[in-house]
Length: 459
Image 1 (cartoon, rainbow, N blue to C red):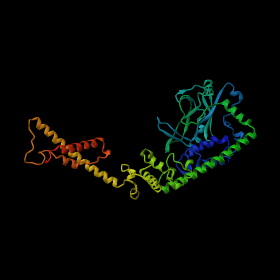
Image 2: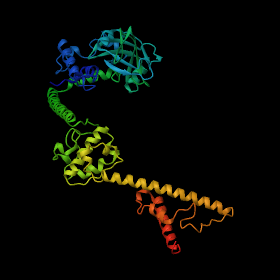
Image 3: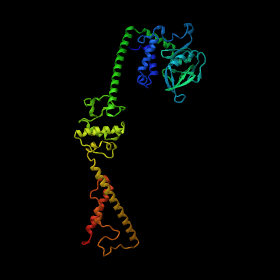
Image 4: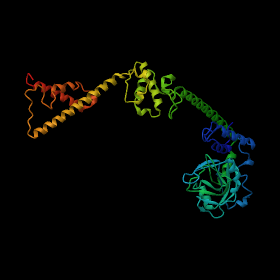
């Protein structure tokens, strides 16, 4: 049944107090949750409240204000509001930083605010007549009526003062999800002009505004109320249907997560996107979040996208391996050739039977190792030749002649034959070695070939 607007503040206050998100019956945080609704309905039953109907006139707000006659109100100014309701407040620059105000403590301490002085922004004392006249526990909060000076009253009417904050003493502090003061005694009420309230629902309002709103509510016709109730009932049915659907989709997603070993991700979809609604569940590389369809139409795009490491940020390494294995397997089934990427750790950890089918796996690795060995040999030879060249230049600068022994058919001492250098140089240098090594080997081969051609015949 829909909750009447008169009781909505009580409902909202209990949802915030009991729906802390720590258990199954207290989720979602802030409500509505099963625990909060149980407390609300029990409270209404205990106090004989029909929450589907307007508040009875005998229970209208401020029936506990006191026995002020119209004559006594003449020339005086009054405000009302909520001083505090059960909630958790945060004070980063104070101790305790997190404070939990429990319903039973506020309910017991509510009368203690009566007669207490008013201050401005917790620091400016206000002269008479600024004080709380009456306070009581109503509708899930500590409500109050206060008498104020004309300047304060006008500031409230202009909207310059819209919130309040209670001042209190406590007997003990109990450690809960934060710190809960016990044995509360409310010692004052501060009107907030420049400060922010710890309890955002703590309010202050001019007395005239309250009277006017109550009158407007009474003037609403019965047909209009019935139409409003009908609209609220329809909204509740729609919201409950949406909540049931979200719960069902969440349960189905968790089942897929257990089946495929991939966790739900932020931004992941519990339902198939409209563009892929005809793709079967097992044709997604990530079927938990419905990402990367790998049917024949989309598998190439999935492979190209997931091959970029920057697009894998949401996943753990094990999840990446599982997703890539599904993409590669689907690509091979569709006849798409996939190249092995040895520098990618996800490719390296794919199952061996899957890696064996990748283009370049095994053979390419062996060829690369062989080329690296040849390149190392060539580099050592080049370094040795450079050292010999430098030694010969040094000897020539000292006037020494370098003459090959007439009796030796081989190369002079310290020299290497051109054909021997030519024999150890690789014939083809892969471009992936870089332009420098490629050009150096090309020049050495050309120089050695020219030297062989220039030798006198018979040598």
